[in-house]
Length: 163
Image 1 (tube, one colour):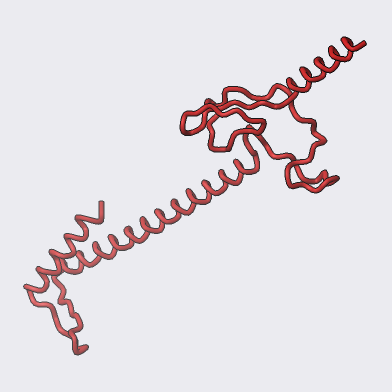
Image 2 (tube, helix red, strand yellow; image 1 turned 90 degrees about the horizontal axis):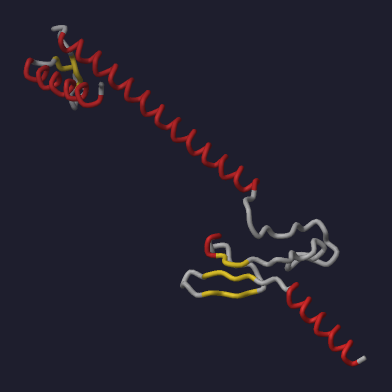
């Protein structure tokens, strides 16, 4: 009878030891780590050497959950969170759309500036007298030197900004 009890006890210990979840991984310092808990999230999958063969029952509540509260989902150990991936994709799309809108705004402003510079160049080359305002607010006509300087400035704008 004692022998049967010892055999049953030994078999129970053997089964309970194999049912324990055992994780094995290499940490960021290169050391092997053995644990009954999953490795931290910063450990890449290729560094996980052994995963538990037995999965905990689904009825077990996650750490920190109130007993009897089935509304709290169990934490994900591996895989991808689809909601998180979808939100990440939406943020990336919004950033790309914002960048594209900003680029279009800059392109429109540059095209507008080029059109104004070309119009100014046509006016300067037409030979018509051009009047400007001085510091006192008086109307002053451009002389040939001022016209040449303004023509050179506008040509620089057209040459550098307009393709």
